[in-house]
Image (tube, rainbow, N blue to C red):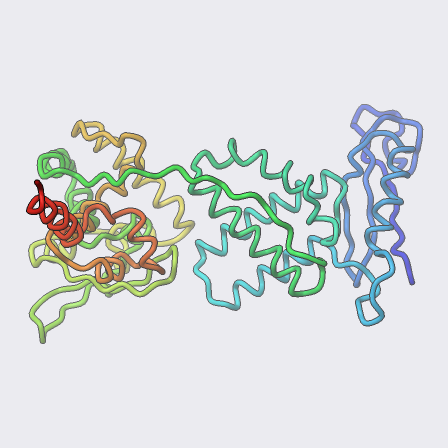
Length: 373
């Protein structure tokens, strides 16, 4: 079996008197590795300034890249973590996932790869170690303050590890303990709060964005990137609807909106002819959303509407959903209007707002009174 040749070299500090001598062993500058595999050149930090320690780490890398006693029909060399991430991301892209979801996979797996390599793990076969995964997850509390986010990050990491197992790069899917998710409060706006928000909206665009999110239930990213041709007049039914795909899930959404709200949205003046609220229509969507979130935070503050730890813009989406449920619209239909992939997501946030369910519960309790001795 051919072992990849790993070479140690030095990246000297500008002040080092041996600068320019890439293979000098005596200085205390950072040591690095380079090697070639499958026609690709790799460069990685050795994680040390000692040449002796770099030699020891080099032997570990060579052993990882070669693998130990692989099956007869297995590849002759171990798949690097970098290559596995590339293949996985390409596979997800081929599945037609939205840019937002693909971006999350890319960012999170890049962090995982960096963490593994800092701990001397360069191939997929070594990334499933329980201690390594435990140490990696230990940093999530600071990186992802929301428990809901940590649950999603772990689910995406598990998807990657399962992909590696299916590709026969891992001999098992590593187990990770569950994360207890803190319940996020559902916090619809009262009529008085919403009236104050509309009153304090300084421009027609902000006023129209509030109306859009309140009456369509769109999340802020979907509202900010709303296109004019997604506002469709249904002549047969005499109404106007917003027809779009959710950025987060790629789920189709079609929501009728009140006539006055439709007229207000279409009347918004914008330098971009394609989008209603995104002025430039180029660059990163994330930047446009961030700018609008900043404006909304100021608006909520001016209108004395608090969040109680809740995402401010999401209160408009909650208002849309809870209003429908409290007026008897079935959970299944509200779930479709919100663009949720599963009704379980809707039930988790809005179950207590279902009018019919509460009426049935009330009836059961009251019915027991008749047999009271």
